[in-house]
Each structure stands twice: as C-alpha cells, then as structure tokens.
Image 1 (tube, chains in turn red, orange):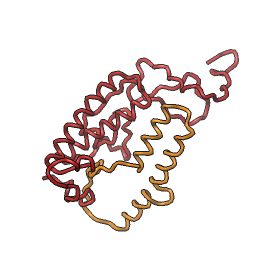
Image 2 (cartoon, rainbow over the protein chains, first blue to last red; image 1 turned 60 degrees about the horizontal axis):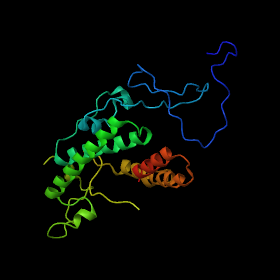
Image 3 (cartoon, helix red, strand yellow; image 1 turned 135 degrees about the vertical axis):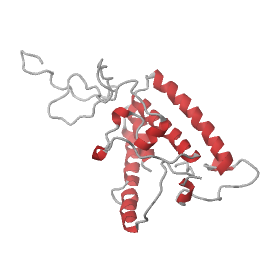
Image 4 (spheres, rainbow over the protein chains, first blue to last red; image 1 turned 120 degrees about the vertical axis):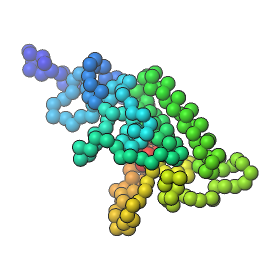
Length: 169
Length: 66
C-alpha cells in the first residue's frame, strides 16, 4: 500500500485497444491460486489468471473430473473425486480428446507455455492414433473417414443416442 | 458450419429414463436461454473482438456450446 495517499493503486487508465497485459508471475503461489494484476480495484469480482505450467491430471482422471487441471477442480457438494468411468475403447478415446480440448483452451491464454504446447502435440498425436484404431474396429466417426474402406458404413449403428454404444463391451 | 463426430464427448449411461427431466435439460440446450443461443452469441461477438486471445477463446467456447 502507498502510505502517502492511502491507496495502493493509481486511478485506472481509460481502456485502450492494446494487447492484453500478461500478469506478473507470483513465485511460490500454490497451484490452485491464480495471479492477479498488481493493481486490482476494490470490491470488484475477479477471475484470477491461471498460472503457467499448472499441475495436470492423467487423461482418465481429467475426463471424470471435468477438468485437466487440479487447480481448477472445484467440486460441488464437497465431492473430491470424479465419478468412476467404464474402461473401454470409446472412453479411452474420449479421455484423450478431452485432454487435447483442455490443453487447447489453456494455450489460448498461455500460448508461450512451451511445456504445455509439447504436451498438446503429444496428446494430439495419441488422439489421432486412438481415433484411427477405434474407427478401424467400430466404424467411421466423421463423414470424411466414412470415405474410406470397401463400403459406406456411416449409417451403421449404434448412433450416440442409442446408448448401448457406451456400455462396456 | 460444424463437423459432426459420431460419438459423445462424455460417456452417458441413463439408469432411469425420466422424460420430464429430459424436457428441462433439452430446453437448457435448445431453449430461449439455452446453450445454442449462447453459442451463436459468442460466435457473433468474435467479429467485433479486437484481441487475438479473446478471438480464440470465443471461437472455442462458442464451439463447445453447440
């Protein structure tokens, strides 16, 4: 706090169209605590910035918790662990895709995090391989992959809302 | 436009079918204040968004909700 003026911050500047400022890193800040700009106003609802290189769940745990990041896992009803998911090829593919999706969202706001980008590439490659393996066994997942093989298999069930697809085989 | 993937994002197993609850859920999805409306708003807000980071976030959130 500035002891001369009684205020820790100058008056806010008028908004400009400059690129968004990168928040300063806070060394030693726990993983579940984000950083704040140095001069945040009083009595304003806030969303802390997620820090670089946050802890991450393994893919199955990420899917069942609904987030890749333990620091963002704020469960309702004080329920700490995500539900248990069945183990089958579809759930494994869903878990990989979820990690790729989460990393993509994280990288939108942390595009200079080289470690996260390396992980993004690694998981995208794993997802691609898992998807190809799944399609070989269970049929095409997209129209473009329906344009392969010996015949048109797109119409072959079960469709996703015929939920026996999701049961353990 | 969107590209359809013939699978769910998250495994679903309905133990007890409940059409009344399903009606509520589907209105949260496609109803007047539903996800689809929000999706279109995010995807349209992109066009006046000056920041690249927010262009990316609006694109991904708008995609997520549809």
